[in-house]
Image (cartoon, rainbow, N blue to C red; front, side, top):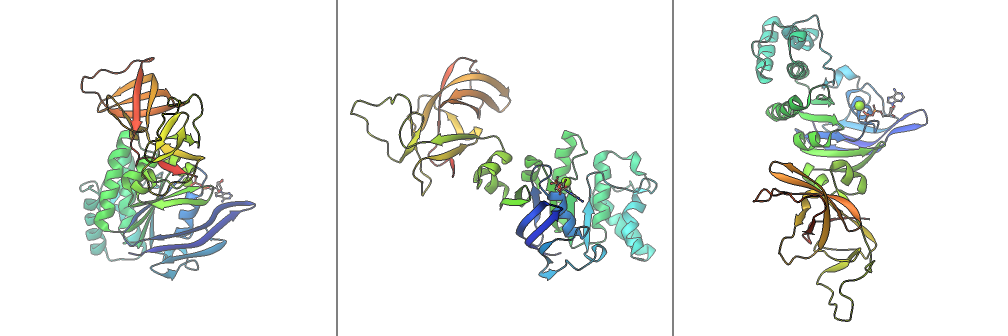
Length: 362
Ligand code: ADP
Ligand code: MG
């Protein structure tokens, strides 16, 4: 078990800087995910932790001790790959036993540890099968057992679920998280799937083009993204421009206009009311998630605007509307109406959002 420190890590391939001054502290026992689009350097970073790639600059420490000069087989890391990489001619038992045999452990100890590990990944009774006689999810659990049986200090997983179909991916990610928590092993997990990252991780590091954009809990990076890239990568959102003066005809002109308390600016001609602490002077950009926008009904709420429904989709517990409003198209996700009646395309509907909900981006 070990904490991990990445200290100013840099990796270049020719003229391309693939990992660009990344510093992170990963806690002992933490499930930590590197999340970012394809090509952003996730695998390269993971391979530096395993020792297969040497950094050009910076340091990696396990439990405070630098390991950059330590060869891969001495780093005590376990690795799980996207394609499982099981030995096809060996049984499940032999696959899991491999690392213990290589370490020349006595046969009774190997038997006991492999049986215990197969039970740990819920594969008791599968020891004599060959990998091809297992489902993809079972094969991935064998790969996990094989990595964990030697009690590594750090578990590294590179897109371990990408080869599974959608349903199994959801089951397996819950399973991987529960196994990780049972073993309490420090884990660095790589994925490009933000939903998967949120489901399994204690913390997530969002990467783009080799740089760290933000590190935080799933809730943090989703609710409080530090920049537009992270906001958009973490999920559906709408970005709205906030200006100091209303654009278009102001509804309340004529001398009687009293600005609402908390007026932060205007989105088109809608007075924007915010209650989010320090608020910059416009212009700035405001970000909303689809489920932060509500239908206003007859309520007297701030940040109220009219939208024309372009499309409505019934999705069980909620309704998804595509709406033309505030000079653009946006998605709105609201609880399904009690009467079950969806608004049809062309109908107009009143929306609003709470003053403490939006995220402000530079
Ligand atoms: P990710 O896992 O996030 O998809 P990678 O770490 O695999 O990203 O790759 C990051 C970038 O580094 C990509 O542009 C890739 O083409 C490049 N790259 C990776 N490995 C090598 C290598 N051995 N030689 C040259 N370029 C590489
Ligand atoms: Mg990769």
